[in-house]
Amino acid sequence: MTHEKQHSLADPASPVVGILSTAIIGALPLIDASRLDDQQRRAVHVGTAVLTGLYIGVTVGGKRLPLRVLAGCAAAAATLRFADVGDVIDARLEEKLRRAGTRHPRRWMAAGTAAFTFAGFLSDRAAARRAQVRAMLDDEPEQVRSLDPRVRGLIQGMLAAGDTAGARELRAQLDVAQEVYWADEFTSTVYLDVPADMPRAVPHDQVFPVRAQFLGPEGTPYHVVLQLSAGQLDHLAAATPDQENAGSVDSFLTEWPDPSEAVYIVDSLDGTNSPIGS
Image 1 (cartoon, rainbow, N blue to C red):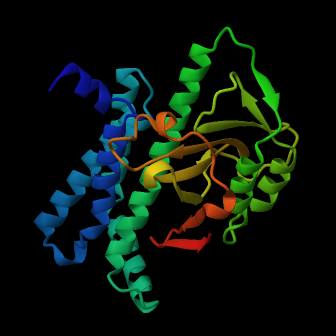
Image 2 (image 1 turned 120 degrees about the horizontal axis):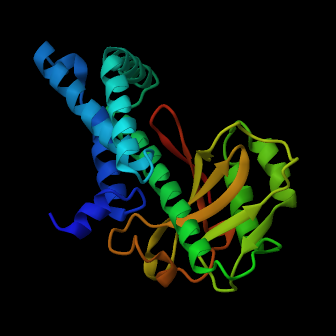
Image 3 (image 1 turned 180 degrees about the vertical axis):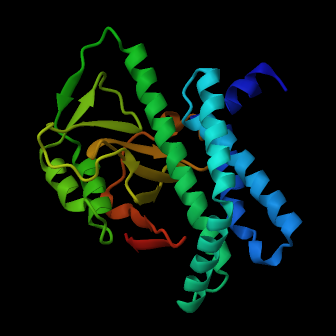
């Protein structure tokens, strides 16, 4: 393995990590523990714990190796400790989906898990881009301006899709939000400035569970995700699942789409991804 590949696999914002983690973690729900014997089930539990530890070590453990190892070991141990409970929850979710008339429920569970994993990757990638922008423009003054109407419309569409907790507070934040920028060039990430005294949606960081999807130049598909920081609007970021273009979105995307051209997708806990409208 080359040094470059090693570096890519250790970078949570790397397309390699995003694609591998989405594919592997998304595939885990396809395994039905009830069809395995004790030895096979134990092997799956151990394998899942190892994969979880590696994923958490890379994405949460920070840049220092000791912290990554500590975070990974803790995550692996917790996963293994509660593996039997996870099997029970997994089986109940599958049964719930079957009773609701869902065909191939495990495929839907896998799709939902992959969507959440990919959303986390997009969040990590946007945060990394933000750090790069700050580093490159360290001598440039940070400025604020009114939001692009298309950006505001996209966020409004995401907040209006479905019945999502915290959407009311986020709409209030959006009414007064401004864009933080360092240069006038178009970028696929918009950083948001919200007054600190505005009501918060949640007391932690998360990716808002609604994505916008649209087709960019030459029919390239894009996902738009909304990142919250401590319950406030933080940034809007566009990315593409196309592996060839994943690392150079800004080279292909030159403007935000009209909100009417987007389809809004709700990522549900039951593993389904529901298009709300266009």
